[in-house]
Amino acid sequence: MKPGKRKPVKPRHDAQARFSGYAKPLVDEALRHSAHLDPSADDFHKLRVALRRLRTLLWVWRPLLKRDMAELERGYLKRVGAAAGSARDWDIAAQMLDELDSDGATVAAERLNAARLAARDSACATLTAADLRHALREMLHKVNQALNTAPRRASIEDLAQNSVRAARRDLKKCVRRAGKAAKSDYAAWHDVRKAAKKLRYTLEFFAPILPRRDAKRLKPLKRLQKRFGYLNDAVASERLLNEHREIFADDASADSTLAALRQDRKRLQRRAAKLIGA
Image (tube, rainbow, N blue to C red):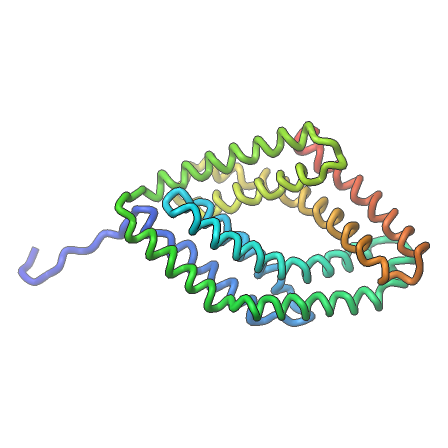
C-alpha cells in the first residue's frame, strides 16, 4: 500500500451496527405518511403498517437491548398505531357495508360518513399530540446509542436466523391454539394473524442474507395473512357497528345489517380455518 493511502474500511456486519439501516427507512416512511393525513388518503393504513414493521424490528433486536427499552418503545408504537387504526377501522366498515345487500347499510351511509370524519379528526389530533417526528427520531437515536455502546457484538446473520426460528415457533404455537379454540374465541384466531405478520416482516427484512428456502415461505404466509386479514376486518366491523348502533335509522336496520355481517364473518372464518386445518 502506498504511503499516505488509507486501507479501505470494510462494512461492519455486526447486528448492532446494522439496526439503523433497517429502521431509518421505516421511520422516514412513517413520518411521510403522518404528514399527509386527509379524509381521502390511504395514509392511515400505510402509517400503521410502517409502525407495525418498526415494532417487529424492535422485537428482532430485543435480545441485544435492555428489555425495558425495547418494550417501552414498542408500547409507544402500538399506541400510536392504534390511533391510526381507529380511523382505518371506519373506512373498512364503510367498505364492507357497501358490499352488503342490506337496506340498513344504505340508510346508515350519511351517518356513517359523519362517524368516519369524526374518527379521522380524533386520530389526527392524537397523532399530532404524539409528536411522531420528534419521538421516532429520538427512538432511533436512543436505540442506536444503546446498541453501539454494547460490549458484546452479534452477527447480523445469527440475529436473522434466530429471529426467523423464534417467529416460526410463535406462529406454530398460535396455529395449534387456534385449532383447539372455539370458533367464538376470536383472540386465538387474531393471534395467528399477528404471528404470521411478524414472521413475514422478519423474512422480508433479512431476505438477502437468509437461505433461499426461507424466501419460499413468504408466499403461503402472505396467503394466510390475507385470509386472516379479511376475517379480522369482518370481526372488527361487526364489533364497531354494534357499538355504534346510533348510525342506523332504527333497530331493525341495525339488526338486519349486523346479521348480514355475522354471516359474512362466519364464511370468512371457515375459509381461514382451512389454512390451519381447524
